[in-house]
Length: 263
Image 1 (cartoon, one colour):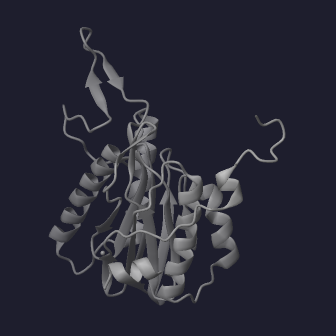
Image 2: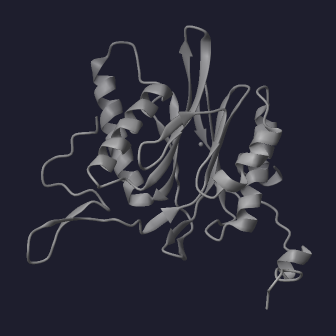
């Protein structure tokens, strides 16, 4: 929390014929046959998000790996979408850039209607489920797990929304979500400690606890994190910052000690 306090002291789309999104179609050498990229190259790891009293908070690190090499250290994987939503992504970064292009076109088209209404997080989430499922059915998936959060006025007042969708179109809405390695290590913490009337400060503390666990256990994570929030007043994506760590635990110094069959 200290580091965060110091840092703030922010059906599928129509793709033009002949265009090839990064990680998508390419003409095979010689034969002219179409091939698909079936494996992601530059990838980001876990995204953590949860609802709190005033809105939705989302967090992830800023690393991107080239295979198993932690190649990039300042990649932002949380973006604002329109007036009411934010999106975070795990997985192939170039595919995430393509998704952001789709969303830019969607929000621009919505804005040009000028009808006094704008797309909320639920509409964005529904759109992305169709995009991901559509690409999956073409055997040309977008290799991402996406988290969509937002706040928009509804019949019952300000309505908070948080959902996710993966690369094959599986989607759901929840009070707290985590992608990647966080789905295994952060979800148990969130289930045990999350409550609906959390303040922003409590939400930051809980998210940082999850990020610290992932930093210790996920080789693809780095100690440079970014937090974003969205409320009725709009979205804020804060500058990256680091957490205080401690690597002196006995099992960190000698992880094989006491393990059955270890060398």
